Image (cartoon, one colour):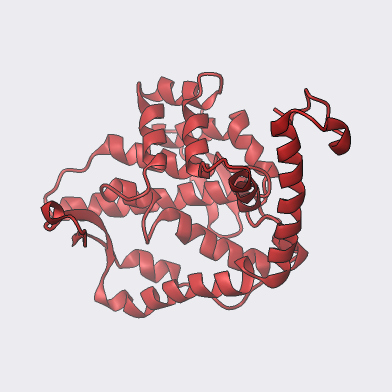
Length: 298
């Protein structure tokens, strides 16, 4: 018999995938894909455990948390649009929630440390671009799962992740100044590192989220009146909004840019850069103890 699936999360509590909700069951199927299971072996904060021993949480757990927050934001979007007599687009909403779940699928080992190595050897692709390619790959399982749910969905999800600036309120769920990603990692990284500074009033923020058309400040004269529909906060949430911004600053100062973490990252980047240069040149494999067919070479 079909039944609900449940995950206990240290940040959000019980995350439930309802058996009668097609989108929840799609997400549950995506969790089983090898591309997503790979995230179990990728640490969210890379080498930060050298400073914070508890910071061993993974991209796998983070992505599930982001999916959960994205579902809650979409409920708010639906409520706010209906209040304003605007049409709610269910297909765009589903695409945004799935994109939130898969937003980090393209991260390499050690997360941003690995991305730094790629830049050093001239590969300038962001992990969002890798994510898009993995989602659209005909060799992978994710594309098949998405296409079975709705034709063309894999391309829609990939396009959403590859685009940096939010185009509408659905895109803002995945990428904006107040997106599901930030609402998860700020709480998760603080909890797992044991850092007491940088707390946010999540419930109060979510209670006062609103949707509005925000004027864009663009240099192009033709786009002077351009606007985008995105998230904003009611006046009552001003102190919580200030704390939200301060939390990001505090975590960057105390965790992400900690001197010891940066030092370890630098050493690993130097090592992997040497390995990458030997691999790309096709010579010197004896010096790095890698045979030409080794997975790291490929």
